[in-house]
Length: 146
Image 1 (cartoon, one colour):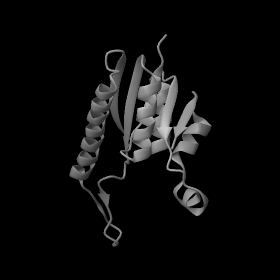
Image 2 (cartoon, helix red, strand yellow):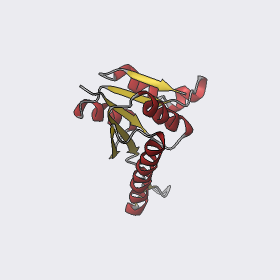
Image 3 (tube, one colour):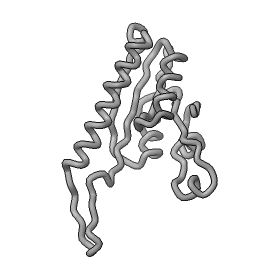
Image 4 (cartoon, helix red, strand yellow):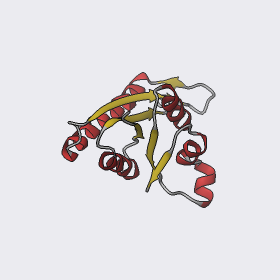
């Protein structure tokens, strides 16, 4: 059975390195690129306790995810793998690590390949690490690319 590889994309150089790694190491099967939109995208506060939701901001974030999927298709075509790899794209909204893990569990993913920003120290403590959370909790093997 051909593997199903999940590659989360956020548009960073690290996530593209992960995609390029997957494209060069999995020349058969299925690769799904997943862009996760922050559910707070489009929510603005006004310091007065109120706030409002700008649906257009959320729509733009979803469109950006779709554009990343299109760019992944161009890269896969340049790598010459589209003849043997079924490339799928997905855009989901949610907490990044949880959404990646849920997608992997619900879509029979065999392997996750993702980029890491390589933060350490205070930045890692304050910002957290999506790659670390996914690695610790994933039900499948995870490859981290820097």
